[in-house]
Image 1: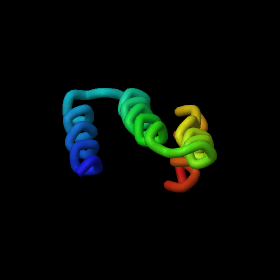
Image 2: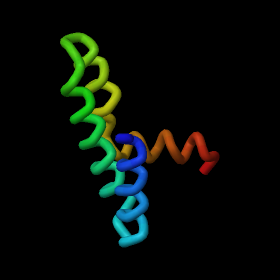
Image 3: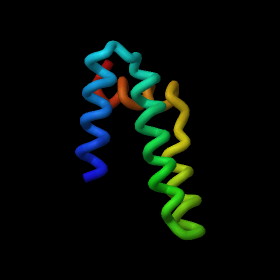
Image 4: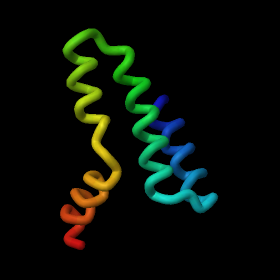
Length: 67
């Protein structure tokens, strides 16, 4: 259910012309909220994955796409 809501939010944001950074920040915010539901070390591991700066994410994404 959460994924469905997230996809709807992302679609609306994309249609309204939000930048990639804004969409990334929105997704990151939702992921952080999900991390808060986890206990101790799982929380720390989750936050380590989620707290990737946008510039690093964009670079990795472009490399994966061959750009």
